[in-house]
Amino acid sequence: GNSVTQMEGPVTLSEEAFLTINCTYTATGYPSLFWYVQYPGEGLQLLLKATKADDKGSNKGFEATYRKETTSFHLEKGSVQVSDSAVYFCALSETSGSARQLTFGSGTQLTVLP
Amino acid sequence: DTEVTQTPKHLVMGMTNKKSLKCEQHMGHRAMYWYKQKAKKPPELMFVYSYEKLSINESVPSRFSPECPNSSLLNLHLHALQPEDSALYLCASSQERAGVVQYFGPGTRLLVL
Image (cartoon, each protein chain N blue to C red):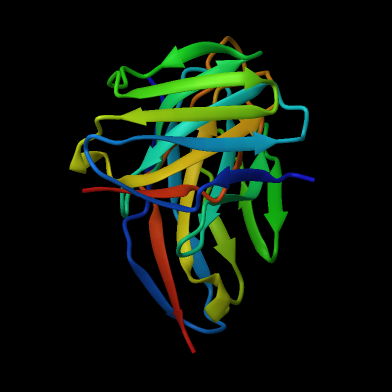
């Protein structure tokens, strides 16, 4: 079956620090990969996505590259802000068949201090 | 427009009450989803509707009853819930094919007393 393993949190950084949140996956095929962000008291928002190997997703200064050889999709940001404090979920979705499930990682709580 | 709306935002109910959660999208998506999320955990899939028909039920207790009256609306009817059902209930929608983005609503925070 599919699975997503995500870096354990919580992660606490100072403003303008570099962020990496590790994500690796196991999948039977060639999944689409996503990072979702959940701000306190809100639903999940799509942060970025990649649909095939070597694709780089990017949004709001965040980036992640789909690495098939290492089955990874690590999230990075060069300079975090206080407003980036949230929970980040890595997820995958199969790209064939009738399955519509998202498989989520456990989530990583990020706190950015001023 | 990538908005999914959910009402109510908060709901408190007793174990003998009947209530409903509502979800709406106008993106023309033909797949809609209900998730349950407990604090500090990822969302857990409950139901998937495809073209207004229930396609996946992840062994959810019958006290949760989904309904998809049309392609834009998704309801979750609640009856005789237990305190452990207290959670954030998230609705999502997507195009009806594999591997696509699911767009989430803001959720309904449910407290069962």
